[in-house]
Amino acid sequence: MKQKHYVIGNWKLYLDREKSIEHAIAIEKNKSIVSSDALEIVVCPSHVNLDKISGINKSVSLGAQDCGFENSGAHTGQVSPDDLVSIGCEYVIIGHSERRYQLGETDDVINRKIIAALKSGLVPIVCFGETFEANEKGISGEFVKNQIKSAFEGVSLEDNQRVIVAYEPVWAIYPSKHVVTTQHVHEMVEIIHKTCSPVLGGAYSYCVVYGGSVTGENVANFIDLPGINGVLPGHASTDSSEFAKIIAIVNDML
Ligand code: 13P
Image 1 (cartoon, rainbow, N blue to C red):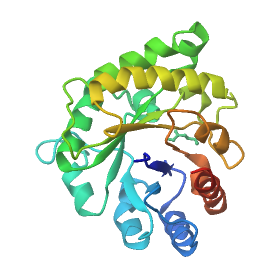
Image 2: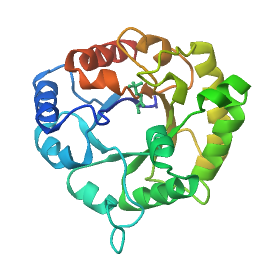
Image 3: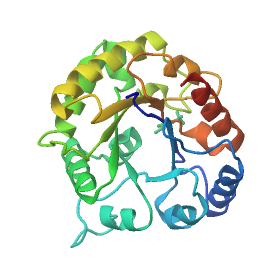
Image 4: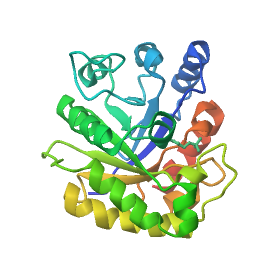
């Protein structure tokens, strides 16, 4: 069986409510943007817009950009993974570098969120990636290995549970002007597989996607690499024609 591919659009905080709705409608109207057995398309709007977008986007799947680590209790501002499921989410991004470095989210919190998301039946899209400084020092592999080990500590996947591992070098995320080479991504993805496979189990329990300034221009370079099963565009996924272009290219390559 060939492993599924993914195009996951992380809308971040680029679109306000009105623009999110416009974008969702444009996606729904475009008949070429449809999930299939081979390619799953996921959109991840901001939390407050999830419910609304869930009602509009029927031909693609829905993901949240974060979740809490509990479903109820004294946890001000946290979002219950169970509630995300009840409004139609199947996926949740966890451990994005913008949460790690803008909000100080720790490895321990990320680990608890992964466990909670899995328990609620969500597929966690867990982000890993070295900082600019780590890359400059030549320690990208060690950096990401440590992140992965902490994130999945105590996690053991059941038969029906899956994880998507996103490699996102922090220094290559838009609006950074640094360009990552496919050779670097290739080397890092090999390290990621070597680290994940003993922890997460067989080839069908997890897959690796790439994120970091993915556009219609460069997506083919990443999809072409062995061990990569999709992409996680941020900025480019908020433009409906660019998002459609990325999907068309990935579809052509499957
Ligand atoms: P950009 O595609 O905007 O660089 O974002 C990548 C990312 O962080 C997706 O989660």
